[in-house]
Length: 415
Image 1 (tube, rainbow, N blue to C red):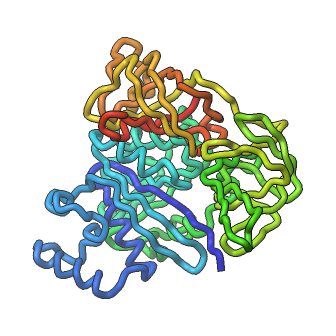
Image 2: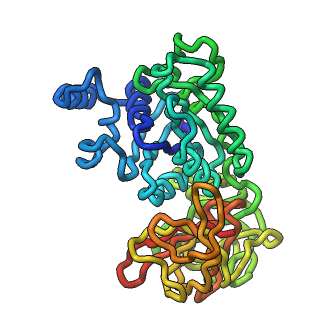
Image 3: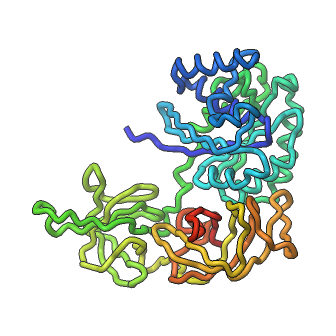
């Protein structure tokens, strides 16, 4: 049975309980083995802690366990009968903004934790802004440590109202609020008896039931070709298939399509998968397309509809998050990776640097260092087939790579 996959990220200020929440979610949903539980129980006892420290399930680096903080993005997988889940536990410090961007870039849902004692803090705003920039479709504000404020409804209501006022300035489609105690397990998997005033869903119920089917773009057909399949065998003598992942739209047998950059048109003759032929394909399926006409198609080409093409351009405006310790070089040359295409580009202009705490645009200081978010203009050596990131998160995203060191220096979103 094919169960739907939901990706979600967790973010929040330091010590807000992100790792504890994930550990509690895994434990209460019976997604960890007994030996794993015994190991963290023993580790908790050695550290002289009361009870079991569930944060040890996700804090994998030695430095993280010593400091009790998350530094790198920790990925965890679990499933329930309703859904499969991939969790990205992202760090809270300002110096790890880049890690939050990479961890959240593919998420359907962002969980932002708020300490009930401290309310909305600078990090809460920063993570909400980044979630908005990444256009994560669903935002859940988990008001944690309710046990430390005696499960008071007025504390929850106050934080909810403050965040709603702030979120009015952001582009956020769907915001939900859940009062929880990750340590005690209130409203994580099981409904809390301590908060009878809260009538909403528990966190796991929300994650299992939130509608993510419309998070993909099913209107604009985009199929970046990843590989050309030619078996060269007697059984498949004339087989020529174009393998890739559907980035947008719905492809059906018999549909008329166009190939970029050549502009040649053809008709879909067949759609193959590892399990055999299927009548239609849609995001995020990986399939092989066979066309009726023999057209010269290779990796990096894109199959689209003749009446609905992406922008084909060498001059592109990007919003980037800079990942590298070496600052951005104006007029510098970088390799750019977009869908299945690779090209070279030059950074023509830094338009402004964004303050991720206030959304203020700094037009004076244009030196872009690690973790900075900025708007830039680039020119590529060959045309790319791009959509605005707001339209399609796959065809609207790029990576910049240092050609000398092969390090990924920035992630970019097409404006």
